[in-house]
Length: 321
Image (cartoon, rainbow, N blue to C red; front, side, top):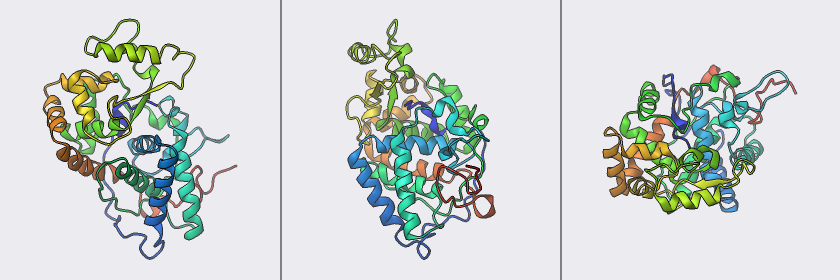
């Protein structure tokens, strides 16, 4: 599962979140918050990779035509969906299982009311909090997309070998500046992990000179059979994996980044000051990450007649089966 930069890279822009409100379900589904929180906590306790997996699915969803749960839709004989794109093949099953569990519980409590896109946005925030990250506001009222097409993904997500120039260029249209780009990258990668193929070029056949030699040897042993064992993965924060904290930035400064796309943030003069800031100031990191996530979570949301509330999250309501 590639925690490449850049699940938050968007190439189009527009904010259509005027109709979202924090108390959207107060009357129609008063148990919404409790159900999402309780099931998210239970799932994270069962499988500690759930937070990282769900955050990644959230970014991959929002990056393609906005935060509308289009990435959750499965292909059928009539249509190949976003899930078929190679960059989505490694999205982890724990995230989809979590969304399905929450949706099932909410359909029992308040049938046909809560959208899958709201579930994904709220569950992502809750899991970040459980992992030790900041609590930020998630306005609700998103509608689910009726469309999910494989070709829509191309060009929306940058791969792990992206340059800083490309990252900045991708973020700009959605109003994300360089500082926010750095904080979102760190926030995504502090609890994330990547499959060996995503960083193999940094350790085989020759080591990337910017990588700490001890880390090189450790990853070489772990990934020795990565071409046959494609499930082998490494935590991106090798010091405090699974904990939402600013250690990822300290790692970058010490040359113990698994991804080259993280390491270059310390060598580029546009991004280096923010790596240094967040490495020394965990409060600034948490606060700035929360604010940036608020911005991402309302990116190109659908409202009103622009979408629907799906009965099940993996299929549009009038899908052929």
